Length: 531
Image 1: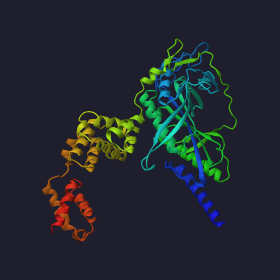
Image 2: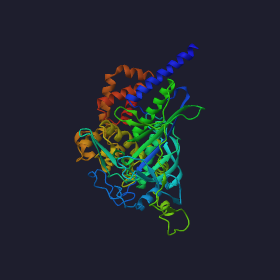
Image 3: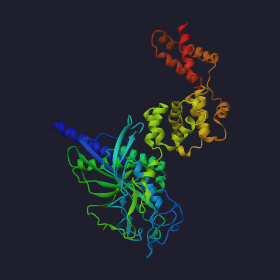
Image 4: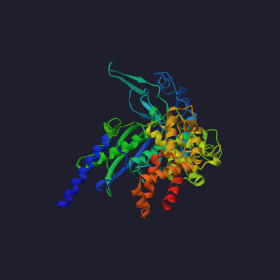
């Protein structure tokens, strides 16, 4: 009995500390769940379709345009105006659905979803509810975060449906004037809503799914995925329950604005729910928002009463016909067969190619492909000019271990790095020719961030950052280290082989990390053997 009470106290203490931890640090590590709690996560992704005009009007789609300058009469719900479907939106929607192994509906329908917000002038949104563009897809994706997950593993999530819909406008609140105004530039912007089944268990899996979707949508040209511009928005449905019990009450966290925030928001919300339930509380079916500053979810509105959206068929749009096999008829809008034939290589195929053709590890392949800019550098260095002289594994190691380390130290995103692929290739060539070592490569990269006009070889030359390979100079370092460390030398000669590396470390310090350590170790062994 006493043991059970102590165990319970420890569990509650764990929950309390985890709750505080996620509120302050927003940690992203997958943690073990006490009391056999299981978390269930499903995502809804709203992706802005990358077109020049809106879904049902000819108004321009332009982020950052002056307020209310990209608005047609239809967008403002002027009486007498009618929607005209943007063919390009349908093509990109079908393209995305095929990439996700969806079943394309030969005939889909548009519906009106009624709700009354100031930034929705018509009082309804045109969407696809009963007969969406596509259903029953699957997304298989890797989950790997260095330092968090030990090894990569694969997860699959079922895609319930993919539908086309229009976005609403944006309300602008002026606290000084105490007025609310409306910007309709976003009203009518084309969206794809991708609704995933609740097949995920952790925040890292949710973030990995979003990352994979970003890679796929970017390659397809369906969406630019700039989350900071609102081009991709994520809603997470989260619940917890004990093993072998019914699913718990879910909450929805709306409009999460970055991949990392997806992991943070999900993990925080899971721990919040576990903490409440462990203390005998109740989870309410509510909509919450993610506060990125305080790193916690906050209540927005409850969902205990199901809102009646009064769905009805859109009377001003005919059924949408897509050809799926067979012969193209007059009523068909687009040809899914032709779109399928034109699909580009998808991220998973690229990862497999890196492993099979370049003999990279799965971890390397995931890291490279998951960053579009990093993969672009790899291809430019390893797969283009002078590619036969460069080892793909050396290139990958350099980009992952040296370049990313320097950029992280300087808090620079790789897409903001001004070092060109040509200059990075020059550093790789210097490494492979034994002109520099990884330590010197980092020094050169650091200098190159601030001095973009000089080439890496010029920087290395005038800074003196070249590796010492001359045998005579290396022998001088070896003699000095042997002379200055007699006790270490005696231990090595008495059979403690590890002392050799202690002496090698002294040589590295003495030479400012410039000595060719392979040659230095060989010389040390020889000199210590010959007393």
